[in-house]
Length: 275
Image 1 (cartoon, rainbow, N blue to C red):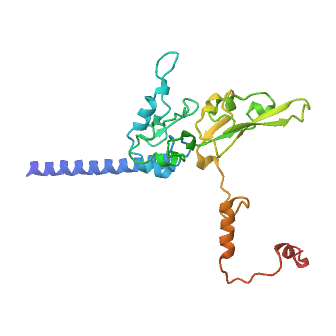
Image 2 (image 1 turned 120 degrees about the vertical axis):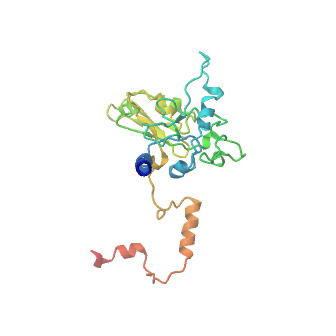
């Protein structure tokens, strides 16, 4: 009987320990998941879907990083050796979901491979190939929107009046994604500024400009689109765009039970009683 009781106690103790460790592991993983999901400053490969969906869809297989590492353009022509791949697979301590691909432009930017080898190998749809197809249904790296380059004017020496076009020259979409704006230097009256201007509708977020920046800490850097871009809201319209004109027409054609004044908005705003 004593042996049986001891076995029962050991069994119960082992079971409780297992349950406790499982619960603790669940809590730690939950906290870790919340932490990495709360860190939006992560740059993903070309064609990556929205971050929240990406974290669910990515199966952490590493095929994209392997394809990136083994691309032909990754061989240094002078040494004949392979350079580090752009894509890194997150590991413990990276503050990113373990096993998901990302890149750091200041270390290794995206080199804009024409065949985009990292995307077709993705088996889960986390990297959306249709989003990178052009009008000819061909893969087009210029369709990628990995992020958006942002210029910090206060630390960019071009805004000081020092001639620098490092980011402009490094951009693979020369004079399209980044252009140089000529502006007279009122302080000296003799010199001119050549200011880098990033164009949101063309910039792919490759990070080549960030890596090329000559300042101690890059004055131009790539941020994920959700962080770098504002949002005007659907109630604002651009009167010169056809889509917005159509929205206005649809809104005006809707029936309403509200009585509308015959006076124009200008007349209303100039009513003496309002002052």
